[in-house]
Amino acid sequence: MTTASATAAGILAAHTREVADFPKPGVMFKDLTPLFRDPAAFDVVLADIAARWAGQVDVVAGVEARGFIIGAPLALRMGLGFVPIRKAGKLPGDTHARSYDLEYGTATIEVTTDAFTAGHRVLLVDDVLATGGTAAAACDLVEGAGAQVVGLEMLLELSFLGGRDRLPGREVRAILVD
Image (tube, rainbow, N blue to C red):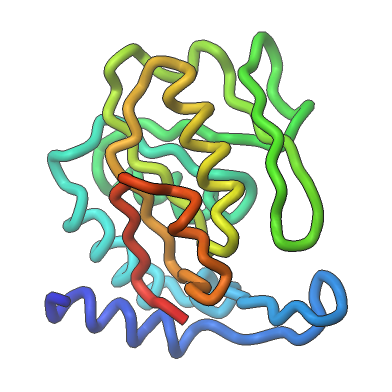
């Protein structure tokens, strides 16, 4: 781990709060709101991610909703475009859709059919890697549109849930592993 990555990990740890029994009993939710409301801390985290992926990707895609919070400013910092991957029914026009299981239910995500140019190298970002269902579905969407997922970047990984197991052969990075 580089010094910048160690700094980002420390900042992320200091700016993550745990909320018990949210969104349902037994779940320990990792709230990143303290990071997002501290511009200096958030900037360090974004700089770390941007440096790691510089020159390797053509576009950043983020999964609704916290992936938008991370992905849009990251794309801007990197001088790249941003593609939102949204919950079902939120995008106009033709879409690709994937349904998946998550740790407390099921969901469907979509991307517009014209979101990517064939061959685009995509960095997929989200806040937390838990069971890997969202990330795997998002990878399917991106690749179904003709682009290539170069890597996945998560702020936090809940390793005890085994999300990486759903993403074999993929470059998955997490700033902080719990």
